[in-house]
Length: 71
Image 1 (cartoon, rainbow, N blue to C red):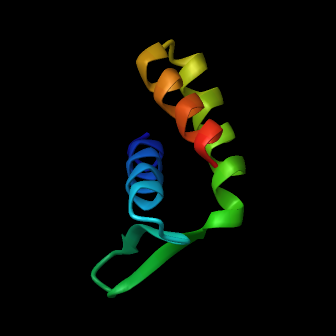
Image 2 (tube, rainbow, N blue to C red; image 1 turned 30 degrees about the horizontal axis):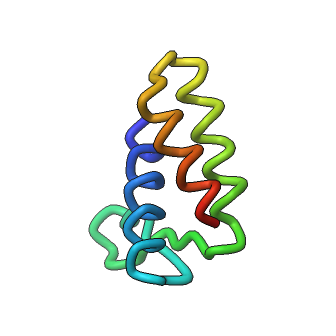
């Protein structure tokens, strides 16, 4: 799903910019965001990795593993 793609992109940018949290998505038209704190990133990336393994999207798997290694 799109949420995993947003998660991977958000964490990638946060690592580059030395941030401690990401805004995953906005609750529809509310100016309220779903925030993922740094301590939750590994578990979230593990879930995304499992999804992409099941989908056989190995390029995404490689990107996610690299992000996990940077944490």
